[in-house]
Amino acid sequence: MTPLRLAYIVAHRVRLVFRRAFQIRTRGVKAVVLRDGEVLLIRHSYHASDRYMLPGGGVGRGETALQACAREVMEETGCRLENTREHGSFLSRNEGFPDEITIVIGSTSDEPRADRGELLEARFFPLHDLPDALTDASRRRVIEVRDGLTPSGQW
Image 1 (tube, helix red, strand yellow):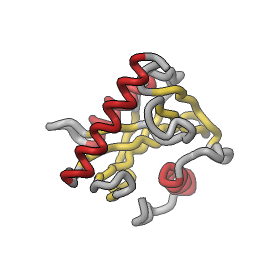
Image 2 (cartoon, one colour):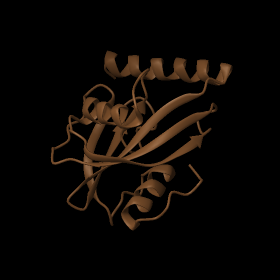
Image 3 (cartoon, helix red, strand yellow):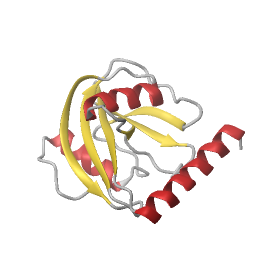
Image 4 (cartoon, helix red, strand yellow):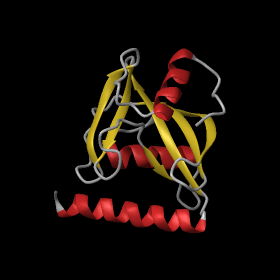
């Protein structure tokens, strides 16, 4: 394990303990990034590294969800997010604290590359052949977008 990966693991655990202890409400974004009938999925190096999920992260002060999503996708995968629109907002308590997550849909023509610190992998998957190891919430969002469904209330 590299020192950088160890730092991400420790920082993630400390952040979770703090947020759980004080029930700090956070704002995050996740992106459904589309390209030619495929969706971009990532695997983190520090948390649930055996699962694929949508790229995303936190919303900074003064940022809109669209701005935060474009920034996070670029930081994590090197892909420029274009033609963005909001899909819906959800409240998750999966991590033990309230997390408001806005789903953004966008497209890219770029080839993803994992940032080598935070991510183990970033790649496109066919929309109709999603990996078994995709998180349930990410699967629900991709299916909603793929099939043109209204966002469900369930994260």
